Image (spheres, rainbow, N blue to C red):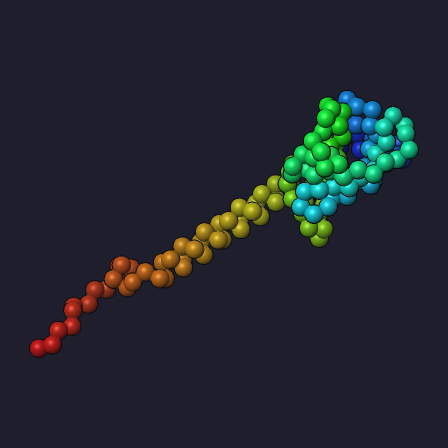
Length: 145
């Protein structure tokens, strides 16, 4: 829904969207992800002068506080979705990859990374087993005679 609002505003050459179910207008061009789960943004209330806002998308905080109204929660939700995509609690991609990878490719990359780590751990454990437990050739014990 937020994406559609941004697309419609962009077609009208506006950088402001009306946040659903609220009197807030969010300037989507000012939404900037900060750290691993925060966002800074500019907004207005029912056509007021622009205000600066801050969100913590991982903790669900708006201006350092839990939203006290449904409208504030909608503003937080819209801001976090613009800053981090459909999973607002996620970590944004590095700037070098942002916009270049479709959503499914990030999952494939994580799966490949996990598989590589598992294979490396298996090989390490296999190489550290004593020779007698590896199977293969068994030698007769050496005795003095």
